[in-house]
Image 1 (cartoon, helix red, strand yellow):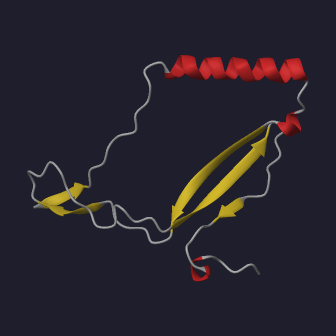
Image 2: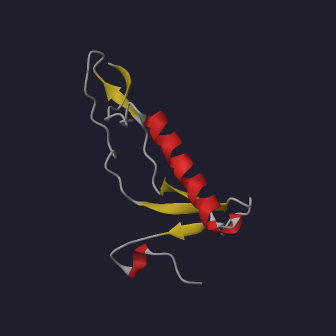
Length: 110
């Protein structure tokens, strides 16, 4: 036995990702200039999930193991933070996004 990383599928990136990025950038620049959009109206946001109960990504398995099962790989208890900036350089307040099936699973309003 030796310590192994648990296995999962790799994220797939298209072969032409660079040209897709270039095309998107040029479309945005064109629309911003044609419509005289102010910098404050151009937003860029990203979200990240934060796991409430993190679990280890490593476990014990036979040295020759190709697939390694891991406890908690399907753990879904998390919340999301949304971070947004404007092209002017300002940041919007960070949003904390929660969901749940009961009121006990959500943070209090106060």
